[in-house]
Image 1 (spheres, rainbow, N blue to C red):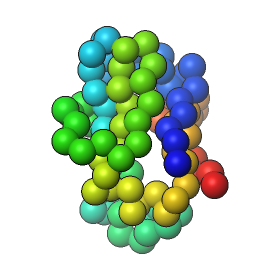
Image 2 (spheres, rainbow, N blue to C red; image 1 turned 180 degrees about the vertical axis):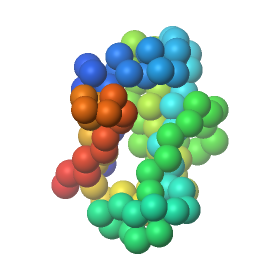
Image 3 (tube, helix red, strand yellow; image 1 turned 30 degrees about the vertical axis):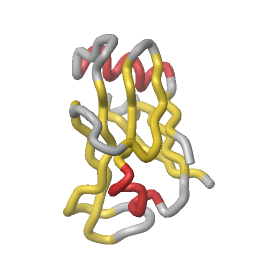
Length: 96
């Protein structure tokens, strides 16, 4: 399992969340919504210090990660983060 981000997603984080070198962005399972794997759960994202990293990718000194306790949500799929240009929001794809 891995986390990948497009250039558009990296720019989104810089402009929308004002991330800088040394910041940490956590992707996590949150209650509510739906996902391809779990009805009633969706993917959340926040700026947060890691506790127990399960998967991470570091780009330009910024750590994008998923805690060990949230790996179940991804059902052994990798996370691909991009931007939906029509609404200027992040979109997520899950790949084997």
